[in-house]
Length: 336
Image (tube, rainbow, N blue to C red; front, side):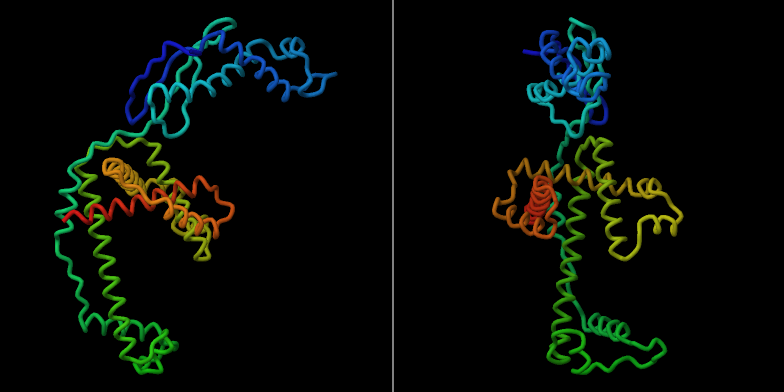
């Protein structure tokens, strides 16, 4: 064992503090690598980088500089072993500080890291069953259809001062898409309106199920997850703005806000998104829900065909999360 006296202390906001010591004899093994690393970045007159004799290097940079580099190398190797042994599930990088560093002595350290938060789920099946049992009004009336047609006719008016709308005839509907005649147009429009109404009803029910589970579950939400959601939200918003032909900076100028103002406004949304993902992850674990590998591969290939430079591992994580979330919602919707 290359370390000892490991202590794990739970902190607030899903953080833990790991303290302990790296044995002096283990630290000694890292000095050769530390010396080589420093030699690559130090300039000493009369010697090429990477070819500086150890005694000359020590004399010029000092023993403690080499010891500091050895300590960092040792911790980068030993930290993963410690979190595995003590079953710590970190998210993000640790904040490491040295508490003792001296020649010939054990290396003392402390590491603070955010861990996967604890989630105590409520009775999610009962909540889902109650919401699913609620009746939806999916009817699309003739009045709804006529209103939609009037809106389409207004949108197709080329002359803004023209008072008369385009006549609803076979020639007109053929300009709107692949329609044979007015009857075909009305039938397809009615069907699309019904599908859209069903989609909206489905989304509302999913939101209601999610809100109910989040509200009654116990979730310790670390700031790291909120910040991650905020970064994703801003990145997506920037992409949407640019797709519309604007820049994010110009948008901020127009609304007279800073990036921090936007993030502050979005904190409640980011918190809800982060909590929902934790809840979905926990339900997937409880119910052993996971996507089929062929589905994952198919979606990955589709994304990578459009984004060839995207890191494959990140694409896999995105796809697995997306497909798992969908399967969890489908599971909840089947609680009848």
